[in-house]
Image 1 (cartoon, rainbow, N blue to C red):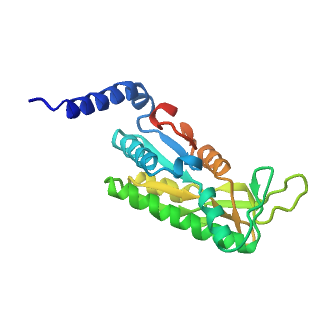
Image 2 (cartoon, rainbow, N blue to C red):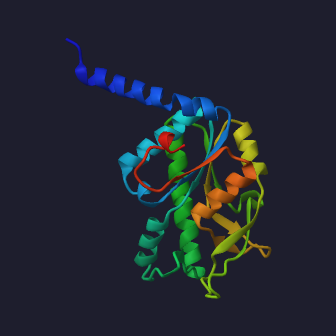
Length: 218
């Protein structure tokens, strides 16, 4: 007896690959920066789907670079520490205590994503924007309101990222940078992904915040 469930599964996978083929051909051997964050990080099933999409991109000769957020998790840990999350014009007001939580949470998210990629057979390396002076920043100004340690990127050093790409790794980057005095700053993940993509001369930036597949967002 034919297992119709397995048959349908194989057919679904084949249809996905057929639909994706034009994108695979277009972006073969190209760098794509994927910003992963928002509600897309909250659902474990969706997270698995995202990681499998990244693994598929890698397997067909595309070079993904992941830049991730972690705002929901940061908010949770801020509140667990008896503090209040405050925002101005969409930016998290980040004092020194909040900055410590941001670094802790993003570091944990980063390691989790790297482990997930490795479990799928993809070589990945977790990075902070501090590493190798990758992301240099200055203090962000928003309507002359002091929002604390939130940075605007002034320079992206791509040397470390390019070395990893050359050695067949997927860089997984959390958006923390340093100013000229080596003070840490929190960086909006969308802005970090955009600036990194420009510096890498990436073929495409894919912002993955909600429920959609990476392959069809190219």
